[in-house]
Amino acid sequence: SLAQLRSSAADVPQQRVAEFLRVQGRHLNSRVLSALAVRVADDPFAKVKKMIKDLIVRLMEEANEEAEHKGWCDTELSTNEQTRKEKTEAVETLHAEIDELESSIAKLTEDISELTKAVAELDTAMAEATKLRQEEKAKNEQTIADAGEAQTAVAQALTVLKEFYAKAGEATALVQQQPTAPEIFDSPYQGMQSENGGVIGMLEVIESDFARLEADTTAAEATAQKEYDTFMTESRVDKAAKSKDIEHKTAKKQDEEQA
Image 1 (cartoon, rainbow, N blue to C red):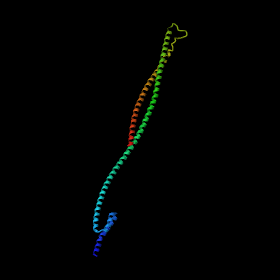
Image 2 (tube, helix red, strand yellow; image 1 turned 90 degrees about the horizontal axis):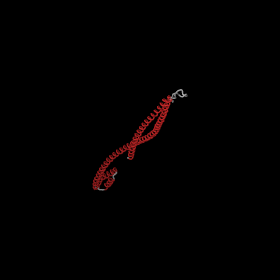
Image 3 (cartoon, rainbow, N blue to C red; image 1 turned 60 degrees about the horizontal axis):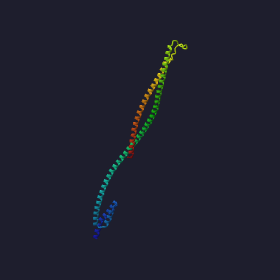
Image 4 (cartoon, rainbow, N blue to C red; image 1 turned 60 degrees about the vertical axis):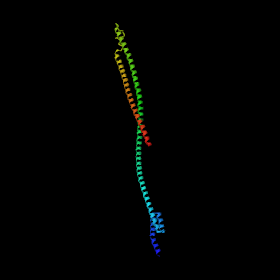
């Protein structure tokens, strides 16, 4: 009849819409569209229109929400990218600082080792110089003492000889004043006057040599002591400076190791 024909004609668009919604539901994997397709196939077309309108409104709202979410995601991604960039730069800076610290620590370790070695060498040099100075001083003092004693002995010998020769000269003068000389002498006794100048002159040269030895040794001792004192003063100053440098570098090294 005509009513059935109209009903059949009205079902055609409804079925097309239902089929379209089913296809899109499968394509988009949307449960909402799939459910709507089922309802469109069963419900009257007027209700379907309303449902479609409601669906469009809902889809638009979801699209807006998705757009807002995408904007938020884009903002977060941009922020995260900037954060990653900043952190990467910070890490690179830290690596550079670590490399610099390691290089500085290695240099400080080398400097401390060299300074420690130099201080030990200074201690050794000062100890050796002190030992040699003591030995040299003892030898010089003994030489000076010996030269002084020798001069005293030679001076005493000269005094004795001069007195002897003086008395011998007086005795010769008395003999020459007698009227006749004793028969046992063919000539007056001169008391070894011919050897007088030679022996005394030799002793005076010896005395002079000992005096010069004493003076030279005394001067050499004074010079050696002055050189030793200068060396020790300079070495102590050098050692103090190096020890202070070691202390400073050690503290700096510890600070950098704890950094």
